Length: 324
Ligand code: ATP
Ligand code: MG
Image (cartoon, rainbow, N blue to C red; front, side, top):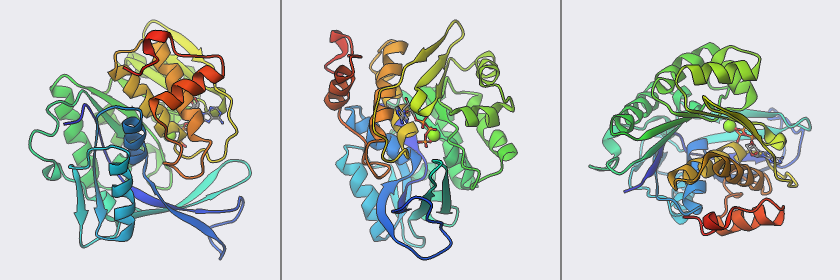
């Protein structure tokens, strides 16, 4: 049984091999790469050494095998996963532009990924779950998955566990006002929120990120970890606001950085690490995620992350170096 669980969509990503190649004309693609923000989170957390479960659905097809085998190989407990015969595995087509923006075509609401129910979870599955992580994208795909996310979050919260939310907004999936509405029931019970600046603005309706973060803290969120890409992260708690500097990397593919950040953050909190050390570890995992092409290819084990931190003169304190 897993101490960290995530529930949501899993899919394969098929990406343009060249920047500025649009999605509306012929040209080369690369993939399938296993993906889906919750799946990336699960794989990354398991690779860091945590006991992690993923609850999601794939189709009875080769793409489904691709994601399930990858999660299993990363050490994720996949007993809460289901294969559905009638529908295809989720697919995202992605194109990158030179200004680092991305465009997507999602085959998700009509795919197996949207059909996740609490019935597919083995009995007793959540008994030892201390952390449940929810992505806003999972709340945006369809009612069945959304209700399952709410149900599991409420169950873990009622058992004394911690619920975290990454708004992970994708305007292609749901308009902004609706996103705010679907996130509200999770925000009511969440202790940790991990947004990007834009997501924080969408979630709170406040263009000023500090004001948005303060609003979440006033609402009862214990930690807001604001992800700032190559600029690192800023953390807000009731008593403190502090910046965590970035690690330097050569960015190859930014997709998945936020999910790997979330994974390292939750894994380190689950180990009982202090907040500032968890935040540094998360910055390192986020930075490393950008160094590989493909959403789940930039996940690493604890030792690799610790060595990377040391290589940039920002080592973990000795008592945390063995990752326990
Ligand atoms: P996504 O949802 O696309 O995965 P995100 O917007 O949620 O991403 P980012 O801010 O892009 O998250 O990345 C998460 C963290 O990873 C950042 O806070 C930072 O610590 C690290 N990171 C991301 N990109 C870089 C980079 N180019 N250089 C150094 N660190 C980075
Ligand atoms: Mg994100």
